[in-house]
Amino acid sequence: MKSLDQIVALAKRRGFVYQTAELYGGLNGVYDFGHLGVLLKQNIRAAWRQSIMATNSNILFLEGAILGPHAMWEASGHTQNFSDPLIDCTNCKRRFRADDIDTQKACLVCGKKAWTDIRQFQLMFETNLGAVADQSTTAYLRPETAQSIFVNFKNIMSTNRVKLPFGIAQIGKAFRNEITPKQFLFRMREFEQMELEWFCTSDQADEFFDLWVASRENFYTQIGINMDHIKLSQHEKSELSHYSSRTTDIEYEFPFGYKELEGIADRGTFDLTQHSKHSGKDLSVHDEATKQSYTPHVIECSVGVDRLFLTLLCDAYTQDTIGGEERTVLKLSPRMAPIKAAVLPLTKKLSEPARALYNELTKLGVMIEFDESGSIGKRYRRQDEIGTPICFTYDFDSKQDNSITVRDRDTTKQERISIDTAREYVMKILQR
Ligand code: ATP
Image (cartoon, rainbow, N blue to C red; front, side, top):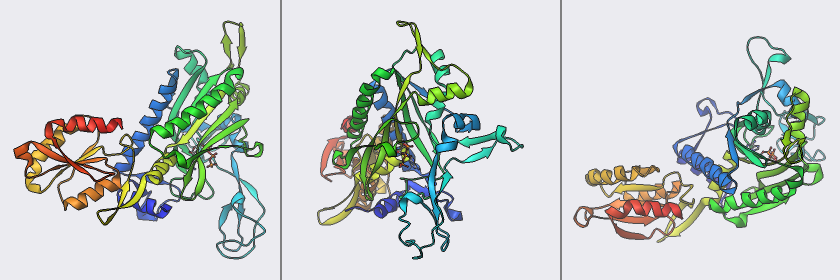
């Protein structure tokens, strides 16, 4: 059984993720991403964009700002409703989310039963623009990317040739002052979301809701996640967010149990109606056929880049024994793997011709790594741990027979191929 600690250790050891400002003791719930982390994130974003576009070509993209004015977040209901119940232990001064605590029992940290009353804690980060601090200059770091889409709805419709139904998709940072950030990348204070808002008529809403749930489930199969660890969970009425009338979560079985990976919500006409009311601007669309105006209905699909990053690491992390030797291997699908292939000269004496092969492979436009130092076994194990699907080894025979050895990450089987076919080999691996 893999533990979260093992996954965190691998992510740190191999430079996927670093604690932000570690030199100064770190910042709780905030992380930096190293070289391999950046590459994995890029693959996640690219796969998401592709999957959204493959489902329906009627998709437009947006990149909204992180800062938004008070009026916008008041209209969306976030200033009033976007909070979590907070409780303190007056003895040890620790702070908890009240829904994580049984107040009939003692504090798990200090063993005393000294709870405060439960109060609501605003999750949005507030700041002021410019030198004057009053409500007109109050701004918030967005806690979800969705609102940029709603407030730009009119702009987007009037500057693009689209008709309903259509979608607006966005990838970007979101911020929540989570009371207890935990479980590594699962609950962070600064994170990234990939959100699609799908606009349709109210009588199409149920059909599109089901379609998007199926399409999003399919996405996880396509990026190689083991579907035995995925399940759908329907929100009870009491669990619904202030804007939603129906929500289905796609849950993944993390080492700490089944938890939400992605939420699909029926936001109805809530957001556009609110923004129209508060801004005084008409956000309805006109139907040429019926000659009537109506407010579009919205189905939302929302998943965190970082939470999916953690999911991929958890799902791919494998420990096995090959030839009597234990190893750790990240069995990521080649499409998601940060490095697609490594070129390893058997010794440094062979670096020059091996580098020529590496230079040739980099022309494919995918990430290839060249590693010439250390024993070949150690180099294989590093590539296994970072999920590289194949390694090409250039040895003393390579010059004579114009061949190299390819080693497969999952089986560790090796075969001899002609150097001239190395490019095709990489391309073929990426189709897997
Ligand atoms: P949770 O119940 O886990 O707090 P939520 O229902 O508040 O999540 P949504 O508002 O639906 O989350 O956000 C959509 C997606 O954004 C989530 O499914 C998750 O993938 C991601 N996400 C939300 N909050 C965080 C966070 N604090 N850290 C990392 N990812 C997050």
